[in-house]
Length: 163
Image (cartoon, rainbow, N blue to C red):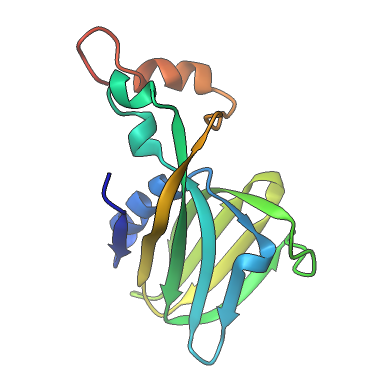
């Protein structure tokens, strides 16, 4: 499988980026806000949902995670909620990346983590990139959420149909 490289320049692009990042894990020490450069970046270990939802032959090979870089440009401010910035080795699990529009094209991008943690980035506009950094590695577990038993029936191919 080819390395993922996505650029987000609007809300719809950011939703696609968010889908690829769902259940990514990252250490607090792998977060960086650079106010002078107006940049926020993070190194994540994203779960490869495309492979997980691939054909039966792909699933039989197991699940995978990939180290990926996430970068936001034109960041004018960053606020943390329930993120213990001093606990560099603590792991956060990313649930979603959302955008709340302000005075167009500015707004706020929120990285929502499990356990009520969040990072809110004030941005001039949406300018983000998600890029895989290297090879994938196997993981035995597929991330699960409340309600997955219902969603799993829709996501897994049955018979010859995908859906």
